[in-house]
Image (cartoon, rainbow, N blue to C red; front, side):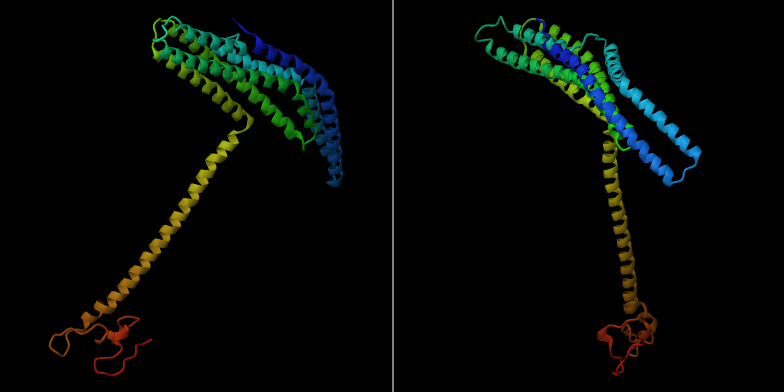
Length: 354
């Protein structure tokens, strides 16, 4: 049994969106001309203050008149233009997927038919032998119905979103009359493109998914009970749901400008890594300097104890080595002398040369 409840919801919003556009168009026109007047007065004041010559004023005025004419034409015909843009995305997706009559009710009916096939597969089993198969079939049918209901809701939301953009979004075109409020119109046009891309990707994914779901019906009709086909259908329904939920949203976010956030997310870790690398290089440089200073101090200490003592030869006691720092070169062995060597060998007080 085919139901048209979801399609009726879409048609209701489509008919109401036309009434929205006709009601909001006079308001948008009033906002537009008010902003245009403010823009012209503001520009004229600065032309006088800056003492612009006549040719510069004429050129600037001509640019403003052309911009005002374009946006006013877009305000008058924006409903039909935006509707054509969104419809073009939908038709392109339907033509690419090969499913021309894809609708929310059609998607949900496919899920109901699949769930009915699952429940009929365990209908002829006995009471005892059919307990486990019935539980598996009931769980699978429930997952399939819920998954296809959410998938149909995704398509319904995208279609209704398009009608809201066409009908109620015309108000934001009126903000294109001045440079300070033009960003409202720019964001609105970006949102229109994101809705169209979302519908395009939804039609592509659902076209493939509906063909796969038709093959599931054939798999379940082979006769006999085995839990593997049921689990196969259950997992496939969940994967189909994830695809229709995630990919169109990502595509729409890219068109709406979220790519800049992604680039910032890439730049920020790179910046942190660069800072960490700089800190690491600074630490390595400090360690190298510390090692060089330690090496110089060690060489200085070695020259005090061994380097200069060997040059003094043997002492008066027949070849006994002279203690470091007390031979002929002892006082000049280094800039410092240990406190234990503060007396010379002859018993007199020795003072280092400073």
